[in-house]
Image (cartoon, rainbow, N blue to C red; front, side, top):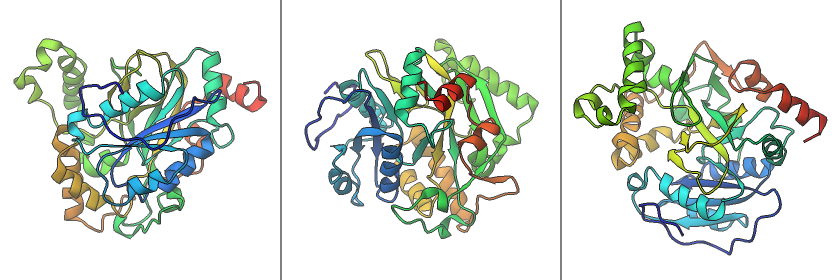
Length: 354
């Protein structure tokens, strides 16, 4: 296997057959995700994923045994440090190079469920055929945080059930979209995590917004400046990036650059999708504490430390507010502007001409 400056990997269960015509493959990395895995696999099988390539990073909850029992899953395992592998993206790039080149590949976390306009009735092969016909090689998405209607600690989600029955709510806005250099060229922030965990960022004034635009849009993209400690020290805590590129026709030049937020330049479709983010269940507080202690995520897991602190201050925290919106389907998200449906895609999909 190609090595990308990381300790790859590992061990694989079963030989990987040649892909069937039009096969879409899914790639993921995980740690202790037994609670969400059955729903994850069910969702992507229903979309038409043919095979799964999943890296387990030292799970202790039975995740690896469960994955090994699934006939369409190829399991890889490593106990190496997640942070030393670019938050696991070096492992994923290596697997994509070996098993995804020339194919459409879905690359997501176990708590991310891909939707696109009309995905309730149009499988992935319909979408990828449409994209192939028009010369597009990537679909950009927004990560949409889903949450329950009461306190997180009381959500009581059961493995294998529908996550959206437990966590059906999301923030309709506000979301900030800013043009940036890395592909797909848009930085999205906002939503529930900004509202709950980064309230000072949302409350910043015009001057602070202009300062941040200059810092992140110019200084941190200038090679000489971005390596200077005095410039780096000007960064302020900011909510997570919600831009994702989960669907890519992988080729010899493809490469994820930072998680699946950015990718080496490829033609990106005008249509967009959404990743329903089903992280916020009854185990979230404990996971935030564990990840804070491990320190393997970006910036020493500073984001997880913030989650853990907020939940420790209020263990009965509810993420609901007056603007919480109940999920209804992809047509709702199109109407709200959270995903984009072109007339071309709607016509091709609904007329069966793809």
